[in-house]
Length: 97
Figure 1 (cartoon, rainbow, N blue to C red):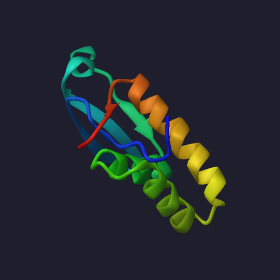
Figure 2 (figure 1 turned 135 degrees about the vertical axis):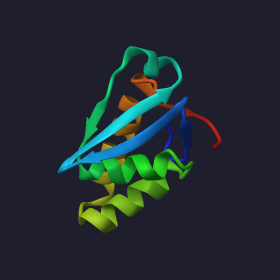
Figure 3 (figure 1 turned 90 degrees about the vertical axis):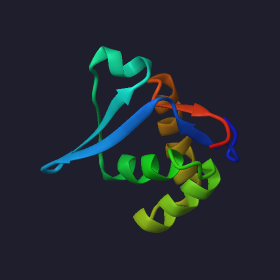
């Protein structure tokens, strides 16, 4: 996974907030048929909102580093890992938006 990688939603996924909880809810596509929801924290929501709109991984990592006051190397690593999880869960796919 390259730092310049971009992503797009695979199917349609909405973010829902219920109290303090944040859930990614697939509403169309293969994962939606499984009736799954995917909980995320505030950082996950921040990353999701940017990746799902096609921002590059490095651009998102820079935003995470600034918003959450973490070193850029750590933000890059976390963003790569989280993007990989979203791809594995079939919520995102690599490619142009």
